Length: 139
Image 1 (tube, rainbow, N blue to C red):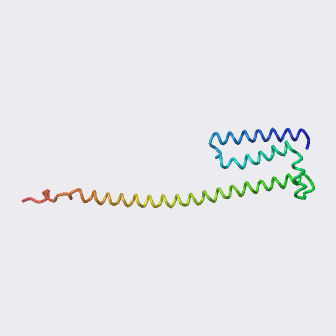
Image 2 (tube, one colour; image 1 turned 90 degrees about the horizontal axis):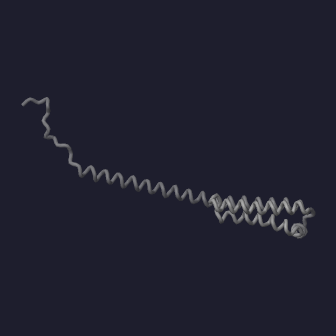
């Protein structure tokens, strides 16, 4: 790996860490979700600092070219991110369904309580009196 590429990867990793940290600080990314992105940035940084690690890992996996290993690692990383996001979406979907059900139950309870209050209010008000004289009758 050339020195220029190593320096570029180090700069990219440091900028990437700064962006993730800024997103977490401003509340746009939760800390628990940032850990995956920080691990990916750390992998870039370690591969730039220790370029022999890529050669070692490619040999360990039986891959002939370092570029093939990099593509394999990137694809595996994308699968990991995709799986992680799918799990998050699944949990949120379940939570949303539960919240919708709870809201529906609370609305029904509120409507029942309002109906009971209206019934009690109707019992308290006296009916209009029929002692009024009819203006059409002449007695």
